[in-house]
Image (cartoon, rainbow over all chains, first blue to last red; front, side, top):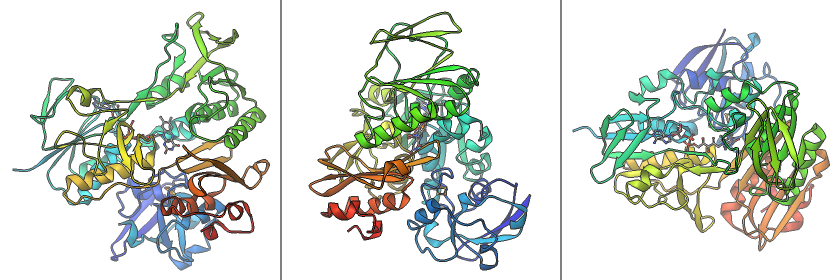
Amino acid sequence: MIKVTYIEFNGTERTVEVEEGVSLMEAAVNNLVPGIDGDCGGMCACATCHVHVEAEWLDKLAPMEEQEDAMLNLAEGRDGSSRLTCQIQATPELDGIRVRTPIGQH
Amino acid sequence: MTETVLILGGGQAGAQAVLSLRQQGFAGRLVLVGSEPFLPYQRPPLSKAFLSGALPRERLLIKPEAFYRQADVECILDTPAVSLDAAERQLTLADDRQLGFDQLLLATGGRPRQLQCPGADHPRLHYLRTLDDVERLREHFLPGARLVVIGAGYIGLEAAAVAVKQGLKVQVLEAAPRVLARVTGAQVSEFFAGVHAEAGVEIHCNTGVVGIDGDPDTARVHTATGDVMEADLVLAGIGLLPNVELAEAAGIACDNGILVDDLARSSAPGVLAAGDCSNHPSVIYGRRLRLESVHNAIEQAKAAAATIAGKPRPYNQVPWFWSDQYDLKLQTAGLLEGHDRALVRGDPQSRSFAVFYLRDNRLLAVDAINRPAEFIAARTLIPAGGQLDPARLTDENVAPQQFA
Ligand SMILES: Cc1cc2nc3c(=O)[nH]c(=O)nc-3n(C[C@H](O)[C@H](O)[C@H](O)COP(=O)(O)OP(=O)(O)OC[C@H]3O[C@@H](n4cnc5c(N)ncnc54)[C@H](O)[C@@H]3O)c2cc1C
Ligand code: FES
């Protein structure tokens, strides 16, 4: 189990425990975290699971694949910290990670 | 008096409607009625990661149980509705329970079209729509087993891909001259036929099934061309019939689905419909559509919830769909019917290419295979409706964002 903190655009924080191997999208959906829909069920096909990853955690993530990079262009307000949570699996290195849900997904 | 909203059908559209209604501020009584014994779950993995065993059952749920509790939804599962009185606004369930409503959303989906030939009741013949279907199928879905897939649509081919990877011997029969004939163009059909052949799937096109016999453990599939194929398992994926009977019997207008307007309203006041069971007008394509996709179920359910909550927001989106086979992700945007040109961008041999379907140089649809950027560009280009330069579409030096 690792701890993941989701921060809403209005500052509300929710920290949830996530089993290793589970994606941060699934963890958000299962813990009723608002702002992450995951419409395609994690197939990297819908871009409704977009977050901004806090700077200190960004380079701990596995690099993006082309599919994720392209799908992110569908997400509103994409920037250098943007990732799709369905493509981030919980691993021990990510214990404590903090991500912000974009206003457009609320 | 508090308002009661009933949602009939606990699938993709039903789950979304629950979520959207509460998000839109609907504070009345909310009841979700479903005929399956499960909370709403995702169907796409049924022919992909769930069939292969990579995804456990618990991870199929669209929302966890806690969500329905928190959203204060009464869930009545495992209980089909058997009749609807649209004028009296009353629904009768199989256990004789009567539920009154102010507004009802029909999200009843569809059921697999059944084979009509002799032997269609063979115990080894399966369909693939529900979790229970997969559980039954999996009993014989074992390495070395012989599988005959009837119908080379997405579901049939996805199942074939999983099966051959797991060491089953797979043959696919398709009555049309090419695979995926109903949903894609010739180039993409040819590509997928090649990929499956390479993986060891035997595909027979122009071959219908005329009958099934054999003992209970072995199905013998007879084809129109006179061949007989022995199988431990037969999977028919020959289309979906929308579940409209309840609506039809209630006098609600149906024609290949429950007819709705762009606010998801049916012909009966207070009754709406969304998802696979519904047939809606598309402004983009200028005709009525009945779509079978997650995106359509979700977006139409959102529109229905908005209507119910008194904040109408017309449904008018470019349809999109995806399919996963082997290492390939196919993403389709739009509908290709009526195209006069199909342009290929990239080399299919590289397993990464896109096909643009145009009419009068306007984009109707794209099939993108491992080409997400083309798919994304198409989702804005299609509704924009502008004339495009075909030479730019196929020029790999022009980025998809620069097509228009
Ligand atoms: C194997 C498979 C793979 C798929 N893959 C993809 C894919 O890759 N991408 C994609 O976009 N789409 C895919 N789809 C299609 C997608 O799953 C459907 O379009 C979507 O589930 C439709 O949602 P729905 O809510 O309209 O219907 P459903 O999800 O079918 O839900 C309808 C529910 O209503 C219930 N019901 C019906 N009648 C009654 C009644 N009288 N009383 C009570 N309950 C009733 C049904 O039992 C069912 O549970 C796939 C479908 C299948 C079967
Ligand atoms: S859940 Fe669809 S892209 Fe992440």
